[in-house]
Image 1 (cartoon, rainbow, N blue to C red):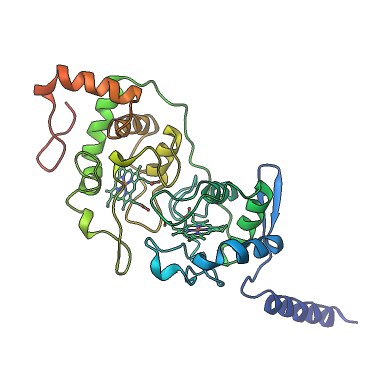
Image 2: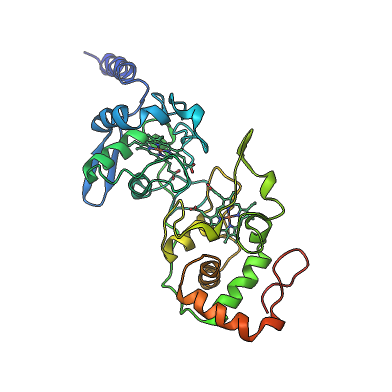
Length: 282
Ligand code: HEC
Ligand code: HEC
């Protein structure tokens, strides 16, 4: 047998495998902590738990999708909201695992915490079969999150200036209620409006709940939505100041909100409002 004939046999074999395994074109693995997930096992789990929303082809067109808003993720686009990697890049396997485990607050995406870590790792591998990007690209380089700086009133006030200067308020509103002047114009795909996050509604975000998660959200952006990445315009320590200010917008008793309340009473006359006509901050 010549090398060419071996190669052509191999190609034919690969083509048959591809057809047999449709719609997933590439077997994939995932690596989450010490576990290796396999798309073969993930497929069974996907068919059982995920297909009704995300669809047999992974394109987000499951039979329940018509009733759901925001729509289930289309895995064929390989665009993900919750990443520890820069905007436009693929997330890590851990990012996908965390999203599946956590679920998405304020949406129909449930938390899949009851599944075992191995099952979730298998599902991550299977999700990666829906887009050819996973065969040719690696996850983006991790966004570095430096150690958190001290929570001080200076930090909160500087964060407030950034919230004004970076125009977060245009979408999120001066008080963070998701009602800024641009809010009603935002969509995440043709015909599908999206509301900026309302900070006063709870303690959890789609992409986590800790200060570190908050840092990552605005440094990575929420891909597939108008929420941009600020990694190129906000310096790491400034980013912690912004995190500290965002905590004062929530209806929670945090160290940040305690500092801010005290300052707001003592310095009421000096505080400029946030919005179109304001300098922000002091
Ligand atoms: C009841 C419907 C529903 C089911 C069932 C469901 N999902 Fe989802 N899923 C959604 C919706 C809706 C979103 C989009 C949420 C958003 O965009 O804010 C989503 C988003 C996702 C994302 C995107 C993560 C990111 O960072 O963008 C992943 C991954 C995911 N689902 C995995 C799964 C897996 C795995 C299963 C099965 C174990 C599953 N989903 C079952 C509705 C569902
Ligand atoms: C162009 C409009 C726009 C601007 C400007 C904007 N955001 Fe957003 N933001 C959004 C939208 C829309 C969402 C909702 C995304 C979703 O639900 O999937 C969002 C979501 C968020 C979330 C929650 C994400 C999650 O995981 O649930 C945080 C935190 C956030 N934005 C912070 C900021 C900060 C800080 C700034 C300024 C530095 C900012 N945003 C600027 C539109 C914007």
